[in-house]
Amino acid sequence: MDFNLTEEQMMVQNMVRDFAEKEITPIIKEYDRKQEMAPFVLPRMAELGILGICLPVKYGGQGMDYISLGLACEELEAVDSTLRVVMSVHMGLNSMGLIQWGTEDQKQRFLVPQARGDKIACFGLTEPGAGSDVAAMDSTARREGESYVINGEKMWISLATKAHNVLWIARTDPETNDPHDGLSAFLVELDREGISRGDIHGKLGVRAGSTGWIACQDVRVPLENRIGEEGEGFKIAMSCLDNGRYTVAAGATGLIRACLDESVSYAQERNAFGREIGKFQLVQQKIAHMVQSYDAARLMYLQAGWMKNQGIRNSRQTSLAKWFATDASFEAASQAVQIHGAYGYSDEYNVERYLRNSKGAVIYEGTSEIHQLIQAGYALGYRQDAPLRKELPTYDEQAWREN
Ligand SMILES: Cc1cc2nc3c(=O)[nH]c(=O)nc-3n(C[C@H](O)[C@H](O)[C@H](O)COP(=O)(O)OP(=O)(O)OC[C@H]3O[C@@H](n4cnc5c(N)ncnc54)[C@H](O)[C@@H]3O)c2cc1C
Image 1: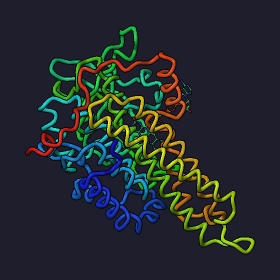
Image 2 (image 1 turned 90 degrees about the vertical axis):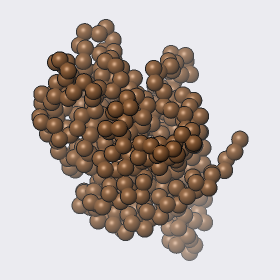
Image 3 (image 1 turned 45 degrees about the horizontal axis):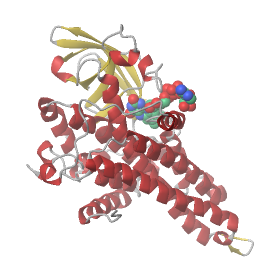
Image 4 (image 1 turned 90 degrees about the horizontal axis):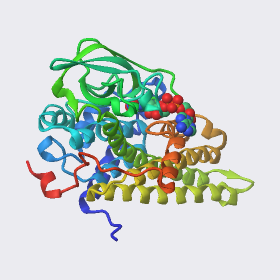
């Protein structure tokens, strides 16, 4: 078992850390307060190749492996969750879904511009009346000759107003016995007639990001925009989530690290009762828990990334990594605020932002409760992973680097 990172993985780690620390740290509080995404974030991530990091060079990507994607997400969220959210939706939930399920034509039309960062992608599963219970969705896609006509509304969609394409899940068959079997997946260009969208304001966290809604009224898309077969929408959405959850797990690991670093430095500079607060055992206990959580979360996401590289199905490990890391990051952020005392309660320090940001990740991409049901389901033998018609391709360095 080799726990070392390769030279290239370390290069990715350093490049992304440099970008986040040098270019985002100085401006993040301002944009978090304004509740806006800094306009240079997406073009700069595109320019650095981050938006196509683990996609093959022939599709406009950087040809790196899935572990590099995790490392990038850890570095991004160590500075701000909104940066990692970009990777979760643009890469994990959309582009990786395309590399897994898309046809060659769809890869050329959608994946290539997304990998280069010329086009931004998002993922539309959640609706006003359907979150965890995906199959309760109302969105429909009606076949009319060589097109589908899409109607419905998606809610809580990250990058809704920044993206050019959405991977939209809709019901194509209302008659199936199991409602999951009646769903299909579509790539919808967001400049099509009948689309309206907007941002949600007043969020608890990820305020320097974009979260919104998208509505489709009689939006016509060609047959070639359907991903997979009719009825495969639920499976496609779940495999996209296997990739999105991986990025969330890795990012939450970075958030734990940020909480740990800031808690250690504050504990060494703040004095109470004649000594630095780091000398108090109750403060040490909080720091020790952060150390424990960071190492465990990191091992879990790296294991999932390794399995992705090898082409081994990792739904269980990814769900476990996501559940563990996000719960642990929320706890770490809460304890980091506690260590900072009243100063932690103001935006003079970063930890209050970490706490607000960490709450989102225990809700999106499967709430902590849903991940507990998933884990118990595997343990009790109620849940097994059936083979998919198309799996995420195994990482093959030579093939990934070919032009
Ligand atoms: C910042 C942010 C960004 C998001 N980005 C996206 C995105 O890009 N694309 C997208 O499609 N969605 C996105 N979402 C939506 C997110 O995926 C959903 O909010 C999530 O799936 C939960 O659904 P819900 O909010 O409808 O909660 P509900 O499903 O209504 O759940 C409410 C509560 O009931 C609990 N619950 C539900 N069912 C069960 C059960 N069977 N057993 C036990 N407890 C249960 C839940 O755990 C939760 O505590 C985003 C959400 C947020 C907050």
